[in-house]
Image (cartoon, rainbow, N blue to C red; front, side):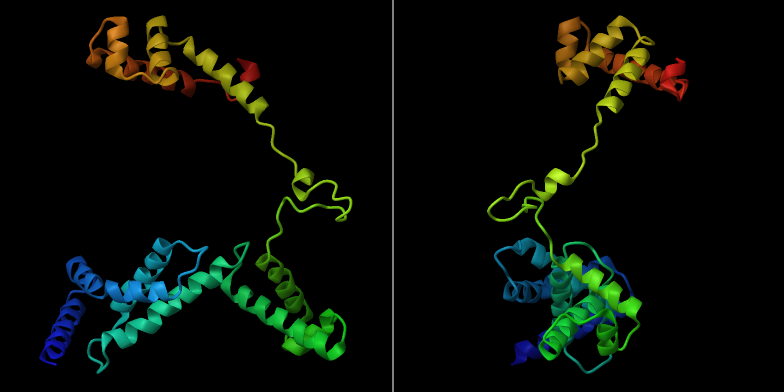
Length: 259
């Protein structure tokens, strides 16, 4: 009993000192360490197979820090009573955001969820899919808002790119087959031509050192042994070569065909 009283007194003292020195990292760290077991316990309550435990603990810890920063020590409330709903709110918000396949603004997420529930209710009543005007009337919003909410609800469910576009008997191409891909060979050819031109601005020795360092991935000491110089000299050669290349690149025409 006395231990609990002493702990409560110590807790109150820490928060009073934090209020007097807002943002004090030492005081905040002391309070975080003190209540981190609580955050971990709440995180374990929401543990799921598909959710890394470390991520949940991080989210719960963020909620703990927010609770510490917002807690009013002058109120006759234990910090743990204030912190628990704050931490749980952060964890639930994390799960709500993570269940969306495409990032959607939070207010639109809420509208989309309401629209999905409304569609389900109207289907039971009408025995058919409701129209946009019927949905808007049920939700008490404009038709444009109802349509926007339905479109946002589509972000809640992801469709695999491996999904066949045909029937089960004749699956045919997948969705991935219909998506084009960028061909970066042209850009790579331009980059190679530019590098070839720039490399003419440095000496053969500098080119060899750069080749050994960045193409063969040798250390400066290894390069020094190969060309018979010290590691410091290799470092100097690399710096000089890179400086010359940067100077040459600054004067490189924007249109390669004009070179």
